Image 1 (cartoon, rainbow, N blue to C red):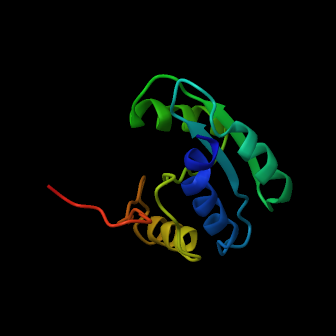
Image 2: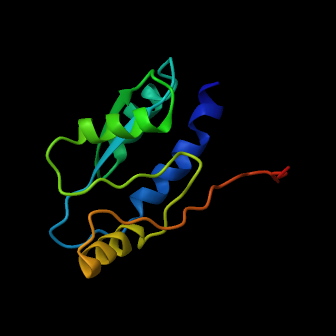
Length: 126
């Protein structure tokens, strides 16, 4: 279970490690595992030892993306922005730069863009 539960998370975190960081920007990674058990906590602890970012891990047992995202916001404390992604996705190197640029260009309270899931096998749509 450990390997399967962390495969996508590892891929995502590796893509985040390659982010272009705008000047005067501090990035923290807040991982909220939305499950009844902490399957990924040990993996996160090991990964965070070599990460260039500060990573914190939290378990949110109430199921649903709303609970997970609200927990992320709560755990972020005082910050200017929260960016969300999921463990079945990867981010491009300019993802954060473009999000912040869009927010500034339009003085927006929130911005969003398409996110494409990463699957390592063919998915059938019904």
